[in-house]
Image (cartoon, rainbow, N blue to C red):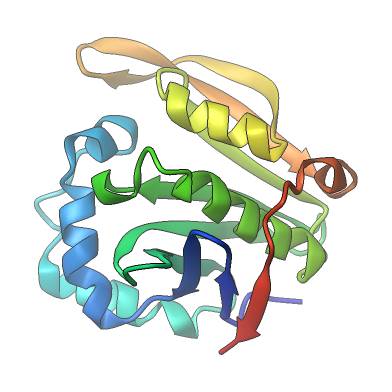
Length: 193
């Protein structure tokens, strides 16, 4: 198993699909959204539109990670991303991360996108464990992760300096045997590319 097959995962509200170079402009806007910056990282001056085009244009060729664009199913507009990375084949585990821009927030798109990618990880890729870390101040994301079935495993106290204060990093994971009870009502229609 590896992440070389890049699926298209369709839910009721979102479609997760492989990135293309053309997504770079939407990602540029998302990466500069104040809420995304607050809960992820300060945009680097080294990030350029050309660099983003190259990065997102190369995602389809990566066999050690799965990067998918989160698109609004009704408009086709990219509103974020979901990523399975830091793959450990021996432990059948990986890391999960996501970001949703302002056009995708408050409508359940992030929750559905998270369910779709986590479900794909367990049901199609045979993963045993998916883990993540999120700032303790990112209450919206923590609620989404708990709804999907992630369990808090620990806290890295005052792990980062953000917005003039130390913030904790919450460590969470979901196991394959726990996933069945948290699938929700998302209907998945996978199509490999």
